[in-house]
Each structure stands twice: as structure tokens, then as C-alpha cells.
Image 1: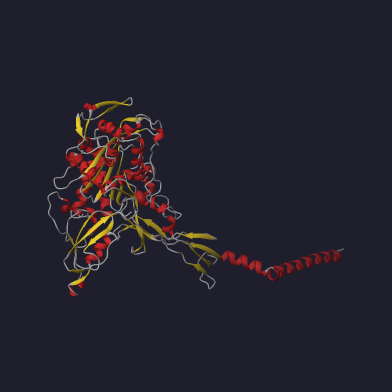
Image 2: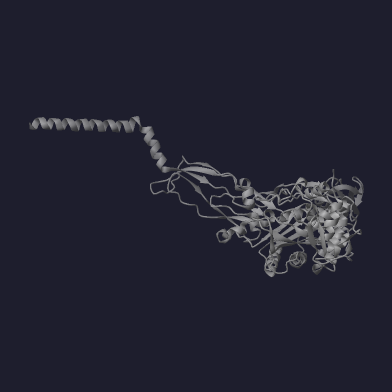
Length: 604
């Protein structure tokens, strides 16, 4: 039996041995390519290479949002992303709600970072490399790499200095009045450029986890509210343009109480017969409720829409609200008189600022420009976003008359506390009860208080809106918001920043005929009849004393002044817009120091 048992066992081991040899042959010969691929897959890894995100600059090339290198995350196996860059705002909370934030996945989550994520982010790259058994990179000739494409940088219209001034003034004003929240916007009216957009409480993108979610919101575009008496400027514009009222025309303000369409309207300060100008200066609800009825409902509605209410402004920011405006067919018998003083309509701060900018620039509604252009890694401009005029809403004559009427608000009206003996300020106050978003009813004792101002009144260089939410003290706009406007104007003027530069040229009695500060941006000034000599370049001094006048028609003022500066000419200009006429004509001989006259306007 034993030999037979050994024979069976030997046969079994033989079969197993043959099976093992067959399997080895299968693995090493027949399926060698398959297992070689598996082995390589365990040592190779595909890493995603993150591009350097485009940085954000202010209008003068100051870095506002930058990238800082961070340690890449270590993957275990397979495919991974290497996060080599983190986002940093050197100014902390400066314009934090405007910039927004970038998430840990490298994608923009709010603000401009979200709106222009595709452009700022660039394109991912990748690499396939070999790692050893200890997960260490082992360079090999088989490495494959596709480099990432860095994002494009962005230059904004914001001026960091004006932004900082606006934020500090707003913070102090909110604290002084015990307000819940505040907004300040500074606009260059001729271009529509946003020079500052401040929100308080602030939001710091560097420490976003410690910020309340409410502070992420950019209330300049996301907050809707009843404008109250600031809207009387829109009503006045319609009445002036349609020639239904003149500044000296009078109206009976009914001694402070008046009933129309079943609604009792009151004025804070009882008035009797007053002029149209006085009605605006003293902000008489009764006067405006009465005189607005000289307009057909369709006429009034046309001007409200034309000034941009009930629609988005077209800014570059996400989460912009369009406000709320009923169509004429939805108006009740009391809608027109109450709309006249800013009720039954909801607006955003930016809508109001741009409407006042149209009054400031001579009657043209501009699209707000926040992105000045796109730049390389060093901040050099590669593409500039164009200035965009939306539509003409009122004539230059009406705009000029309206600004003159608005001077009364500051000289003797509801904002008399901020009048300046040297500078003509035009503006309008606003105070309106807040509406409960749930019930739609007014919240007793809770107000939105505002002031929108511009200076100098004859040719405003800037428009500034200030809005306070629920001031616990000094609820009226002239008491609470107007002083913040004045602080922004004074501090920016003292520093000589942007359109506030050398405010001596704004003075009522000033006879300044030249501005010689080096590097001055002459295009910031809109005062007609003032000679603006420009520095003489060394090349012109060494060259001949006579040359030929270039053709600067149909160009922008900034470009024309730059060309004429190089020729040593002294420049005077009137109007706003692009250059329609020039004297001397193109091709005429001109000499160093010669005066030339430019006439600006809007074409078409």
C-alpha cells in the first residue's frame, strides 16, 4: 500500500508543480504587459498643477490682492492637486466685500473673485511622475508635464487712498450715530468710475472664518431700500426737463399738513408758499406731492426708468439687485404723489449714486465701471475696459439748473451744517422709514438715512453717496450721513487724492489760472475757463519753438492732454465727454506756451 500511496502523492505534487510553472509562464510571458502596467500604475501619479492666480491692483497700480506661496498638500496615491498659492489682501478689510474670497479648492466664492474666477484663475496644468516605495519623487525620463497657464491680473477703478478714507469716515459715522450698518460710494461722474465702495461693518478676506456671514454682503449693490427725499432730485429733473416747473415758480406747502388721494402727507418743518428751489432745499414732501401731478404718470415713469431705477446698473459685481418699481398700470391714486418723495419704490445705493452722477456730468447716465482693465504680472495694462454711456436722461441745461437748486440744500436747507465757505457743494438729504421685508409694513422708528453730494457744484469732480441703516441717534440724513460726506471730501482734499486733488481750484472766489503740481492728472478737473498749463518735455525744449497742432477731435480728454503736454501747450476746455472741437484747428502752426481751447460733448 505504501508504494501506491507515494505514487498518488507524487502525482499530486507533480500536477501542482506543473500548474505553478504554467501560472508563472502565464504571468511572466503571456500576461507580462498587463502586470507591467499595474506595477507602473502603483509607482506613477498624476498631479494637478495649480496656476498662479491673477492679482488685483488699484487704479494707480497698488497691489490690493496678492498670492503667497504655501506648502503643497502631500497625496497618498493616485491623483492630487498641489495648492502652491494662497490669497492675501495686504490691506486687510480694505474693500473686502468688493474683492470677495477664494475657497480652499482655488475657486472664487464671492465678489470679484467669484465674478471673474475663470479669468483670474487661469488653467490647471498636470504632471505624471514616478514615486518610490516610500512615496518619494523619483525623477525619470518618463516624467510628463503640462505647465499651468497663470491667471490674468485685474486693475480696478478703485483708488486705495480714497477707499481707505471712505471706510474710516464711514466707520466713525456709523459708531457716532449708533447705526446698524453703512455704505459709502464715491464716483467719478464723467467716466462712471467707482473710486471707492465702502461697507461697514468691514469684511476681512484673510480671516473670513471670524466674519459674520452678513458682513460678506456688498450692500452697495445688494441692499434695496426706499430712497426717501433723495428721490426728489429725480422728480425735479423730470419737472424741469418737461418745463412744468421753473426754479422760481411757487407752490403752497399747506403749513405742513396736506391730504391727497386719501393719504395725509406731513412735512417735518411746516412751510407756506415757497419756490420750487426752496421746496427742494427744505425737502417739502407736500410741495413735491402737489407739483408732480403736473406730469402725466407715463412721463414720470419714463424718467424714473431712464435714470436707471428698476433695473441693474450693469456693474461687474455679483449679487446685484435691480430694486423694485411698479409699472404705471399697477399704480394706485396715491402712487405718483408718494413716488415724488421716494416712497413706493425700492432702489440700491449704487443706482442712486449713478443717477446723481448723471446730474453731475451734464445729463448722461453712465454704466458704473469697476474694472479698469486687465494687466500682466507686474500690473502693466494690457487691455482697458471702455467707458460706457448708457443714455442721455436730461439736457445739460436742466442738469446745470438742478445742480444750482441742489446748492440750496447745503447753503440754507436740510444739510446746512456741512456748508463750506470756499466750495459750492450740491446735494440732497434723505430719510425714510424702513419696510419690514416679511409684512411689507413700515417699521416705526427705524430709518434709512442718506446724503448724496457733489462738488464743485458748477462742474462736479466727484459724487459721493452715504447711507446709514437704522441710526439710533441723529436719524435725519442731514445730521447723520451728510457729515460723513463732508469728512470724505475734506480728508481726500487735504491729501490731494484723485479728483479731490488741489481743491483750491474749486473755490467760489479763487482766481487760480494754472495748476503746476508735478504728475497732476489734469483730466480730473471739470471747471471751465481755467487754464491748465502742462509741463514741457525736455525734447520740446531742445527742439524747434514752432510745431503743428495735432488733430485731437473725437478723442478722450486724458489722451488729448497727454499729447498736448508733450508740446508744451496751455489748455482750456469746457463741457464733458469727447472732444468735439479744437482751436487752433489741426495743422495750424503753434508755439510753446500757446493757449488752445477744447470743446467737449457727447456724440450722437
